[in-house]
Image (cartoon, rainbow, N blue to C red; front, top):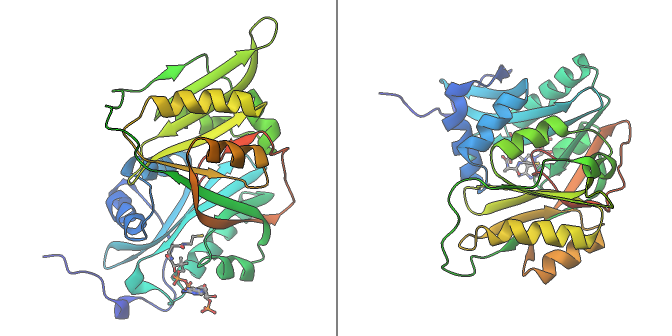
Length: 289
Ligand SMILES: CC(C)(COP(=O)(O)OP(=O)(O)OC[C@H]1O[C@@H](n2cnc3c(N)ncnc32)[C@H](O)[C@@H]1OP(=O)(O)O)[C@@H](O)C(=O)NCCC(=O)NCCS
């Protein structure tokens, strides 16, 4: 019989190990206990995208995690910093985040960013992260009892042009992986109809369906791709994470019946990178940027 790990079994200098497929259920249990929305598939995606998903195991069970998704050397996103409630205040998160930052140093990553909860923020401040801007989680409850569409829907030809300028870095590889795992709506326009004007993606969540990322050249285009995305899943609740510095995104979320339920802080380490950001209507995820 497998015994649950106990607090006294934590070594003074715990090993930070690379997470594997075998840790997926344990990692998902940690994010679920924290009340987070990630699914098993979200964790699998992180494991596949990143060569830096680290954890600390006690008696073979993962009790703390931290992940890093790299976009070349330009920027990496730190996420899923979690410690099981029984193992908090033992320095596990500090050890893991320090390990991830050392790994980022070896990869010569110039900028590391993350979206911090109030609980996590002191830890990052001590490691040299600076606050950059607010991030907000907005939510809309299930509205009707109409059935959701079955299967994945991809509308329009994939093209992420407005994203790089708005984000300030190229994250096409991440976006392509997200399209493969969820719904997508793309909008083109211009004279020849070939100009890429915006997109919205969505994917399943443990509690609510996740809307994002969405980048668009205007609020009108954002409204169009987001409305199409939401209309396909009328029987679900939604989470939408946005940058409140973009007033058009806030106004649109309110207009579509969402309300702000949580506030976080985007933090940055290293060289400053900012995009135009007024084209970002929904981020990709608190763990993805
Ligand atoms: C935030 C969290 C990861 C910290 O994990 P942890 O393993 O307990 O953290 P550590 O023991 O390594 O503590 C590191 C530092 O974080 C800070 N810290 C940790 N827990 C804290 C708390 N509950 N309140 C205030 N500060 C806290 C302290 O500054 C601590 O430094 P210290 O050594 O001087 O006490 C953990 O509380 C957690 O999983 N919370 C829920 C999920 C979450 O919010 N994750 C952060 C996402 S950004």
